[in-house]
Length: 172
Length: 247
Figure 1 (tube, rainbow over the protein chains, first blue to last red):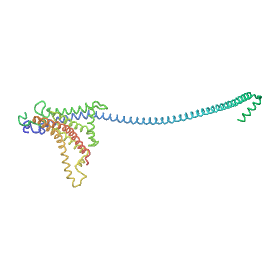
Figure 2: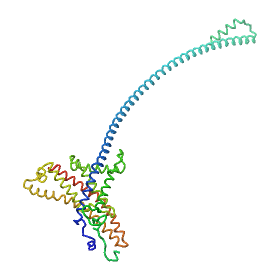
Figure 3: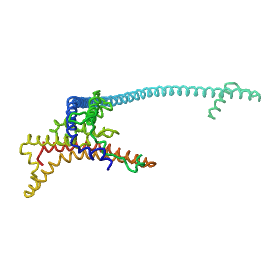
Figure 4: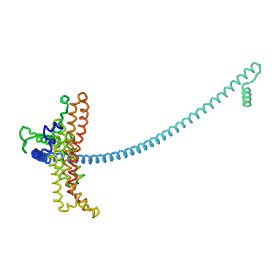
């Protein structure tokens, strides 16, 4: 520390001769800074902060409003959806009933058709049966005549017929 | 050269010398390095608070954001510590904070002159606060301001003793207020200079003091900001005593 003594007093802070200079310039600097801050800087920053705060408050209020609107819209949508579902169910029900009705009518019609067809068939079966019986009689008579002719038995047609008929009836 | 002479040529206090800018003797009006660095302090504070915030943008730029955060930080400090009625002293407290903060920070620039390392400067700041606050206390509360020293919650017998202690501590306030700041600034800068001097003397191990100086600079940056904060918050505490002297 011996060297430092050569370059001046040990602590420049305690050199009283510079105090007046420092204090004078400090006062000047502080006064200038005070006026710059209090007249220009602080009001400006304060106004910016106030503007921002009011903008944020307004935005939050607007957002709240939009949120409310969105909720309303959602409720309206839900109501519309429920209505639409009910309407759809009603339409489905009506369509089902309509189809059932049409089906019933078709079934009834088909039933009637089937009944008439089966009646017709039955009639034809009976006809065919009757024909067949007649043809059997005829064939039997012819066969009987042929047999009688073969044995040279004379028989008139009427008695043969009667005999065949009687035979057939007996069999039947 | 330090090794040749066998001794260390470290003059850690030289950086605090007040010197005339243009030569000659130092009178009270002479422009000195004090003038220069105080002017730079004012310019730096103005750059941040006036030009930084000049955009007035709804979404602030970085500089504007820094200005607004500084404003908000000090505003909240004044309001929280000294009460809402102290807000009218906000410009004064803000000016104090900006001055001390930028004087401390600019002082960290190598070869800079640290105005706040001088007790003459910090004492003027501290005593201005002290006298303002004391006068304010008497103006607002008259003799009731003296209740600050009369601890009514203590037993009656103890009160005169406590009053004496309170009075002493009250008058010590400006001294500790100013010496704390100047001392912290001076010590840090002197230590940095001593370490820097070692770097020249240690030869091959020059990097050790350089690492130490680097670490010290980080610490000094912290100290610079914290001392500005401490100086300001103490001002707020003293202001609170003047506005609300009752314990």
